Image (cartoon, rainbow, N blue to C red; front, top):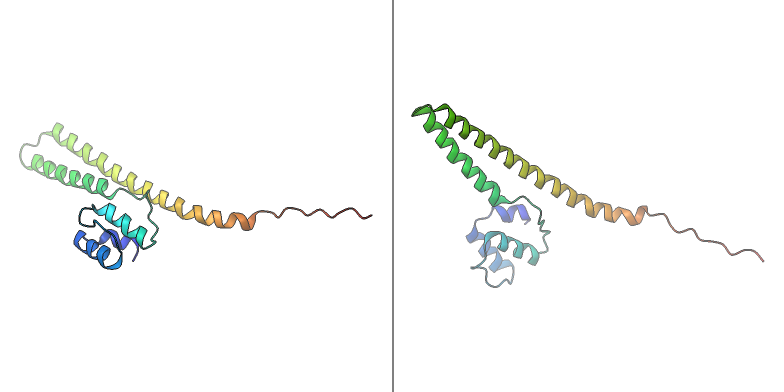
Length: 137
């Protein structure tokens, strides 16, 4: 089980996993990300802190849905063009923000994956110290 699978699980199943497969205490009082982090630590699954904030993107998408409802109401009811343009601008800005957050998470994850690879390759690629031969007597 990896981090992605843990994030997909609902809270009751996460609690079951924590109780059955780990010896964590206080599982009932934990939030989802806190519980995922604890399970990952107990099972030695790498937990990337710089992953995208799922809750932030979720709340932004919720706001976009609400604005789309407002937009459809404006189109059917009054047709007020100024309000319609404001709502459309807000939707556009929020969509751009979600794409930006997803891109940041992707680049951070790639950087984290590259860092251990570079660290492992660095000692092998380091030139060996030249050994000096003692002068012949």
